[in-house]
Length: 285
Ligand code: SAM
Image 1 (tube, rainbow, N blue to C red):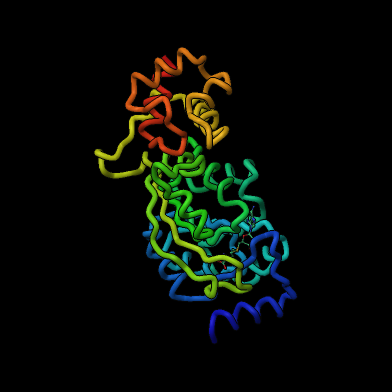
Image 2: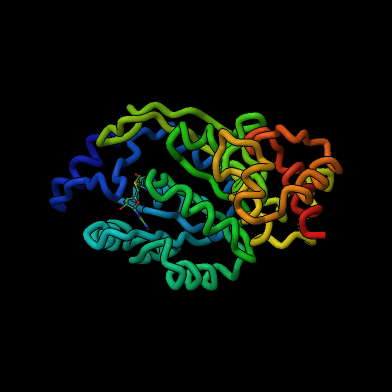
């Protein structure tokens, strides 16, 4: 039986109508599931948090490869399906809750002994919030491997002169690799847009010493306050945005920019992460 037929049969058996507002587009292609699992580099000692377990088809496949899966699902009806369908898997714990709720998220991390990977075919509307949540944790995941909207993947991978706030929020903390584009035909119901698989490895877990960014002496809150101010009017010069947001006065900002490689006419989207770090360090001092 094809995965599409299996998915439709489960839905009809449990009287499930996939909900658009919950991003319920189920994966129906085994090859794509395999690509996602390959990208996640799963090992038998891993604890995995799966966000949005849905009907549990991907969950089962993850469970075959790892020590334990914490399968989080917000939809109570789907939680019942999961409990029923996955009851024979001793290494799957189904968690009924919202991954964006800090209480739910913190409790799962404790259960993973703060050593975990995240895998998800993510509902598109929570992508940025999920990334912010996991990447700003003190103890970050070893990796985050996601299926997400292709355009969002491209925004995350952006480089100067096309940087944006989301790209900085992710690249500041991690190395990002695009693994594959996935056509919308791989899901049921079929979404409006194509997707991509992205692998995100937080820098603290990144192996090569040459890639370790010196962020220790940066106050992250201050850093993102400066970045947000810089992007406040993306068409305007960075200098004007920083002044208008009250981060620095005009004289200070001209002084600071002259100490960097940046021109007075630089725009926020032209700056690399390293430029932002340099700028934040200069503003701090
Ligand atoms: N993992 C399944 C698959 O690959 O076929 C389902 C993926 S579907 C794209 C996204 C799932 O995330 C849905 O089952 C939805 O109910 C669930 N979900 C949506 N928002 C959530 C949240 N805030 N926390 C946990 N699960 C959520």
